[in-house]
Structures are given as structure tokens and as C-alpha cells.
Length: 359
Figure 1 (tube, rainbow, N blue to C red):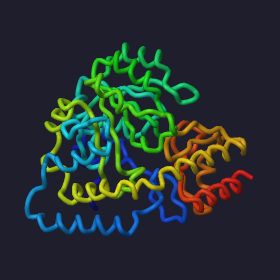
Figure 2: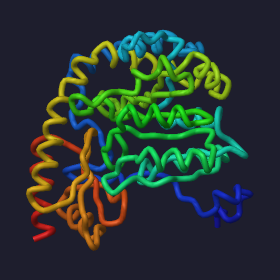
Figure 3: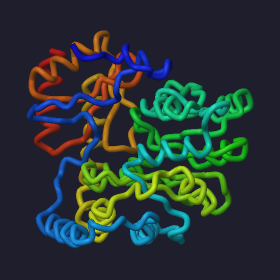
């Protein structure tokens, strides 16, 4: 017989842990991981394939470990007069977040966030031996600035993680709340804008705060709006000194030549890849309206998903939907479920299945 985890000299704090991950099931309607449901057009596929072929001819050499071409393209995409020195990229925003906590967290240091929020945050803290603490969000899932300031004063966190729009609730943070937190924070403040492209009109980005806040970091990803989840490219914008700090902890050549080439091809085709964002935003708003008309509580959402409830037995509802070929996410506070926004046909299937399950 082979050995088990119990037989290995594993770190004590990892012994009862399980790998993170949403269910990956082969069902007709997959609405559980907030992907863009529309694949790239064929001309984009051709451009990406050509870029991979060009990169393949150089695979005997290490890639540009600073990814300067990619960072230049990302800075141009973000705007706000950003320079390549203010932008950093890694294999998904997961690696970006891990590098931030490697650089600014660690033993004897604390990371703070406000629950409910992204379930990977405490795992980044655990993996970097950073103490993890959470404040609370209000009943409408907003962050009360007075509560936030009290938590900062109590815990003196080295890193504060603020998702905006928040996952799993979809809630965006007003910039004045971010500014007050930045003013009080003794360390770094991270605003995670993974779903930033889906914000409703008039909802600003924290990128506009970067010039006056040298310890602010704004993170983004190409996995959601860009329809590039399989490409694995996350990035951030911050003061150049912050980028230099991350260069210390990043593994050498952490972004392959293929990843860089594919990401740059995606950015060249941003117009095509982002073409459905407005449609998805409208369908999100329609989904919120439909759920409320049918008697559900629904969190205001600036993302490409909707948190709704509440159910006495949410797992039974989740299972009932799955039995009907619709996979959503069992996450967030007890009694709530989260549905990603899919195609018109997928959302119709979701609505029909939910009506059957709850009839």
C-alpha cells in the first residue's frame, strides 16, 4: 500500500486542509466559476496560434523574466498614465496575491479582510504563514468604514485585502471608503478588481487613487471579462517600488514565453474579447430583477455573477439544479447561492431549473 498524507512530514497547519477548487463537472450548463461564456472568435484564435508558434521557435531560451513587453501592453490597456514600471504580471491573480503576501506578509504579520469575501484569501495567508483575521461586512455586504478603521487599529495589519467588486457578493467599494482605509493602514492596501470590467456605469476604479497612495495595490485578471481563464494571466498596478518588492520574491522566469505571447495576443484583440461585456452586464441586471420579482433576496452586483437566497437547505437546491444539468456555486453565507452569468440560453435553463426545484 502507498503512504498517505498522515505518513508525510507535512506542516502541522496543513494536515487537515483540502485543496481549493470548485466542482469541475461535465454538465450542460456550467455557471459556477464566473467565466466569460463566449470563446474567442476564430480570428483571435488564429492570432494566438501564430503567437504561440513564434514563441515555440525560441523555447530553447529562457523567457524575458521581467516580461517588459507584456507589462507595457498591460499599462496601455489600463490607462491612467501608468508606466510599465508600475505594472506586474503573474500566472493568474492567484500568484499575484501570493507574491504580495510573500513580500509584505509572513510570520509575525497579519492580513485583514472583511467577510464574506473571496475564499482563497485565507489560503494565501496560510501558505505564507501570515496571521489571518476578518472583520465583518454589513447586512447589505458593504464595508462600514468605522468598523474597518476599528479593525485596523486593533490588528495593525501588514496587508489589507479588499475585493471590489467583492466575491461572492458582487459588491463594489466606494472610493471614499478605500481612501479612508488607505489613510489608516499601517501597511499595504490591496484592492482586488478581478471583476472590474463588469462594474455598472458610474462605479469608479481604485486605479484613479494610485497617484496619491504609494502603498495601494490594484489587482486585475484576464480570466473573467477577457474570456482568458485558460490563459492564466493576472496583473497589478502600484508604485514602482512595490513592483520591485515583488520582483524579489517571484520565482525566476515565472511567466513562460508562451504565456507572455498569448497574453499579448489577447491584449491586441481586447476589443473582440471584451465585446460581450456589455451584454453580460445587461443580462446580470436582468437576472437580479428576475430573482427579486420571484421573491429572492439578491445582493447588488457589479460583477458577472449574482448572489441570491435565502434557502433553509441551500445544498438541496444546489443539488436539484445539478440534477437538472445546471451547475452553480454553493458559496458565501449560509443560505445563499451564487450563479455566474452565462449565455441567454444558459440563463433560461437556470431560471427554468430553479423554478422546478423550488416549486
